[in-house]
Length: 212
Ligand SMILES: CC(C)(COP(=O)(O)OP(=O)(O)OC[C@H]1O[C@@H](n2cnc3c(N)ncnc32)[C@H](O)[C@@H]1OP(=O)(O)O)[C@@H](O)C(=O)NCCC(=O)NCCS
Image (cartoon, rainbow, N blue to C red; front, top):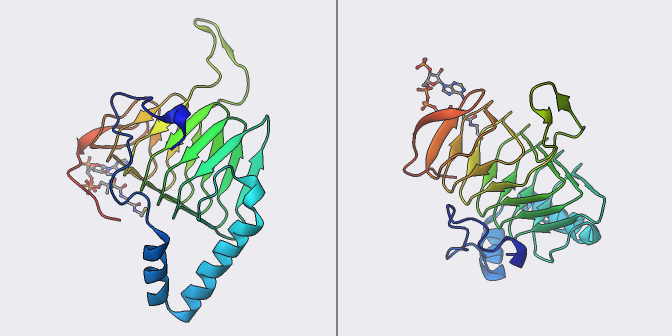
């Protein structure tokens, strides 16, 4: 974990847990069990990652599938943990500091835009077609409140499952072990172990546990 993100939140337990960092030994054990087709797909993913090493600031082994777009600007930094999968068609635009933990899945066509600081904890599953962005992108003035805050960091805890077509907006902190229902728009902080859904996302229950 990067030093900058260590201990940023007293609400979240962001310290790595046992099993966050699967060893290469474990990777090989799993790899040997794959079918030949899956072995080829996984090898291509690793090869693609190796060919694109210059786009990332961490040297861990993770999978970058086909058509993944990574755009860095303004000296952006992208750290990705071991065993994470950036699925086909996902897109990362980074002009800040993005840290994605180990064993995370970023689903197909999901877009992550980071202009400030964004931390996605370990073992999160972000489904397909989600958008996570910490900036509204354009300056905006309103009659009553004046200029709107343009950007604010996002923190997503460990073991968070975000359903398809969900949107997580600037300044939001989602606690550990939360489930965000499909099609939710998350604009306010979500306490740990919560089930939320809807637009705007509202508390709908307490999560005991969920399985990958
Ligand atoms: C999180 C989730 C599983 C919760 O399901 P649940 O607890 O079984 O909820 P229910 O289906 O019993 O619905 C309870 C109520 O919440 C509403 N609701 C459930 N999910 C909702 C959602 N994502 N958005 C808005 N309302 C939702 C239902 O309409 C229902 O309302 P009602 O009581 O007025 O009829 C569900 O919201 C969800 O997102 N499912 C999709 C999971 C998915 O997409 N998986 C793909 C793999 S990543």
